Image 1 (spheres, rainbow, N blue to C red):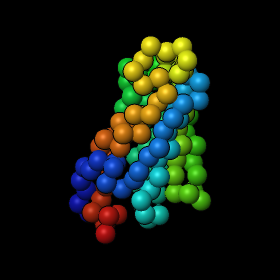
Image 2 (tube, rainbow, N blue to C red):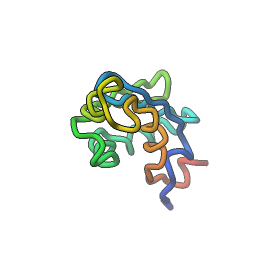
Image 3 (cartoon, rainbow, N blue to C red):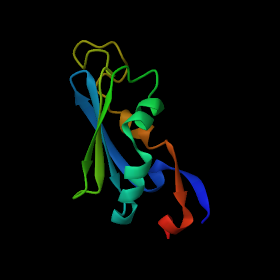
Length: 112
């Protein structure tokens, strides 16, 4: 089976925001057949590595199979949160765009 690298945006969309000092990002499969790819490729450690230097705390992963989605909480990411942070994105709105640029590995058959 041939595999290739694609951007997450090719099979998913995302929405992000804030929960105090934690960024919150949901990644939703565009097609329910792609949800298993998300489960395999988007582990908490991999997401933390993707946001290295931005996410200074732990990453929690929550699976939502009925929605074909995974939700992540990236702790200690927003410099204290919207009202006290000096970060440009103190409310985590750009986290969804950033996660969708992650490269993932898929088999050609998974995309058929």
